[in-house]
View (cartoon, one colour):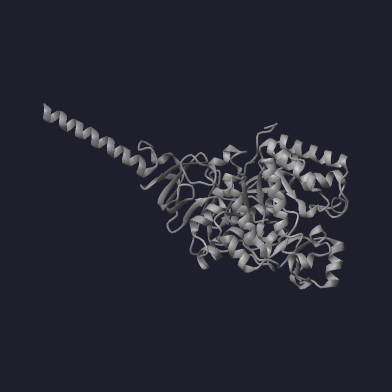
Length: 493
C-alpha cells in the first residue's frame, strides 16, 4: 500500500510538473483546441520588444487578439507560413500628417498599423474623428493643435500651415484666450494631447506656450512640440528652442515629446540628445523622435523660410527641391514659389545625424510624412522599412530588436497614460491586439526616393490591423477598413 501511495504521489507530482512546463513552453492553455484560431502564423521569428522574446513560434489569432504564442503546431481556418519572416508588433507612427486613404496605403505597405497626427494636430477634434470612423485602413488619432486653433482665431489664410496673420502679428489678449478655449474644447473631446509648431508661429510669446503647458499638466496629457528654433545659429539655435520647452515642462510638470529632433538641431543633435536624456534621468517625462532621412520638408510660404533661413539651416537655394517638379531652386524660383506656396524639400540634415538618431535606442522612429497625389518626401512612404533595411541590416548601427522597440513599444508607452488601451499595442503577447507586421529581415527596404516617392517599400509581407489583413503577400487587401480611433475618453479627464 505504501508503494502504491508513493507511486500515486510521484505520478501526481510528475503530471503537475509537466502541465506547468507545458503552460510556460506553449504560452497557451493546454486544453485549447487548435481549430479555435481564426488565423495562424506558423514558424515565424517572433520578436517582442517588451519581453525580449526572440524565437521561432506559432502565433494564433482569435477575435482580433493574439490568443496563443506556442512552440507546438497550431491549426486555424487560415494558416500563413512565416518561416524566415519576423513577426513584430505593428509599427506606430506618432508623427504622420498623411491622414487619408492615399497615405494609409503607403503607411500599411511600410508596416504601420497606427498613424497619429500629434505635431500639428487638429481643431476641431470631434469632426476629425467622425470623418474617419469606419473608413480607415489603419488606426488613427490626433492631438488638439495649437497651430490650427491659432489659424482659426486669427483668420490666417494658410491651408495646412500658417502663411500670414498667425505668422506676422502677435495674438491679442482676447485671441490668446480664444485659442486656449479651443484647445480646452479639443481636450474635452478626447484629443490625445496638445500639438505645437512654435517655429511656424514665431510671434507666439513664451508666456502663451508656458500657460498651455500648464494646461497640459492639469489635464494629464503630453505636449508634442516642434520647437521655436532650428539649426545651429545662435541665439536662435535648436539648443535654445529645446531649452524653452524643457524649462516649461520642468516648471509645470507637463509631459513633453520633442518632434523630429534631427531636423531641429541639425549639427547640434548630439548635444540636444544629451539634454533630453539628462532631463529623463532626472525624472522628467520627456521623449523624442526622428526620421531616417537627410532632408526636411515643409511649405515654402511658411515662417521657416523667412529671412535668415540660409544661415539657420546651413544651406542655400540649390539645396531646396520643389516637390511638384523635383527641380532644385534658384534665387528667382525661390521667390516665385514662395509667393505661390507649396511643399519644398530642404537637403539640410547631415548623414551622420540621421545615423546617430537611428542608432539611439531612446529615439523613436516617426515619419513626419505626407503624400499628396503621389508627391512628397519619401519619409511618408518608406521610413520604417528604411530603418530596418539601411540602418539595421546594411549599416548595423542598431539591433533589430532595438529598431522594433523604437517603432512599436516606445510609441505605445508614450500614450499609455492617456489611452490605457495602448498597453495592448506595441507588444506580442497573449491578449494583445493583433496589430502585426510580418517582414523578411533579409530583403526589407524602402524604395521611395526624393524624385519618385510613390514607390511602396518591399520585404514587408503581411500587415494585420485588429486581426484583419490590410497587406497580404506584399499586396494591399481591397475592401477592408479595420482602423479604429486612438482617443482619450471624452470629458475633463
